[in-house]
Image 1 (cartoon, rainbow, N blue to C red):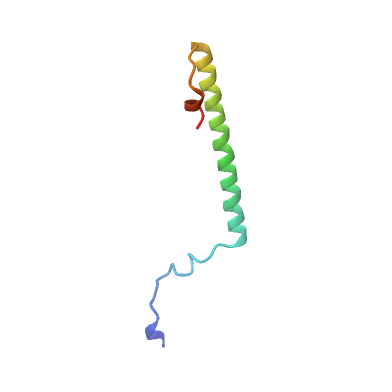
Image 2 (image 1 turned 180 degrees about the vertical axis):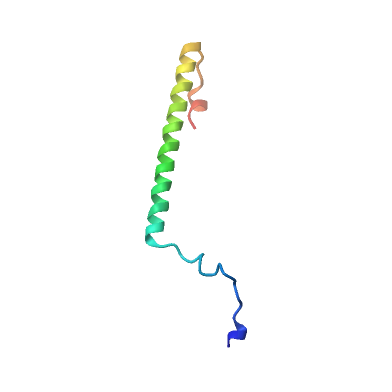
Length: 66
């Protein structure tokens, strides 16, 4: 019977389904990364708006927001 089983090597058990705690950790890291990205995007928008106010440039509202 063991002749029919394929040997997957030493990594066959290392890549099983993630545990609940691992999934929670991944979810928390993702939320943290998304929050950090949103913060950076808001800062960039604010700096862009401040720059445009200083130079007197105006952008079409449709082009400014995506």
